[in-house]
Length: 262
Image (cartoon, rainbow, N blue to C red; front, top):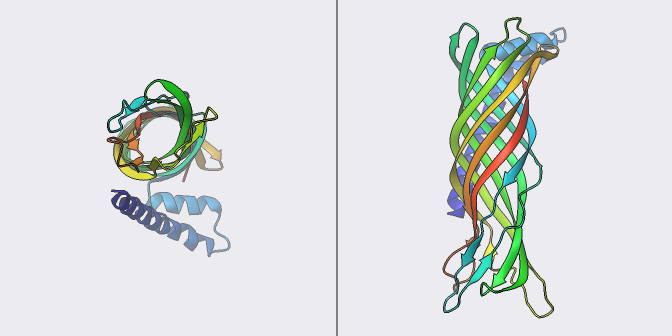
């Protein structure tokens, strides 16, 4: 499964690289003309590719799951979760094609890819579900790819647009960096109990925001709030005496995403 997920992630990376390579040709051609102004370059890009958005922002994630890891002939260890993830950065790119235009409403369809920096999950381990002798932590990285729709409701004076986003798709999840720490002088941590794992889960997002026109010359800037369901990941069980593995639980994220529209 890790190899399969890596191959899928790599194939999407190749596709994204090809898309960005194609998008760069109009700008490169205009740059070869010494007198071509920046506005003409932007108009040429828009004429061939309706909307490309370079995105950045931050998010607060809710990940981790209280659970019991069952051991053969024993009661098992209880894992608790003691925190939600603090604000972490994200980056991405969106590419949208023309869709439906009705008066002041414009709906585009395309893809939206985000790279969310790794978030930590931590908590305590109750050995035999009784003695809280250890703490643990691991990292979760999400890379959701959305097949998305973006609706714009235009201001009557063409100063700004209201933006509504919705999308579904695969989330490429990597869990890694599992470690334990002893809370007593006599407990030995096992940092090899679980190892890194890749898996693909279903993800969905919805959002609302605003786009201001002509912020950087003719380049608009949009910012929106997005809520994302990220699916569930897991670590790889590395102990044949344990019958189940550590799950991330169903992940969610509240995010603010801004984008420069080309």
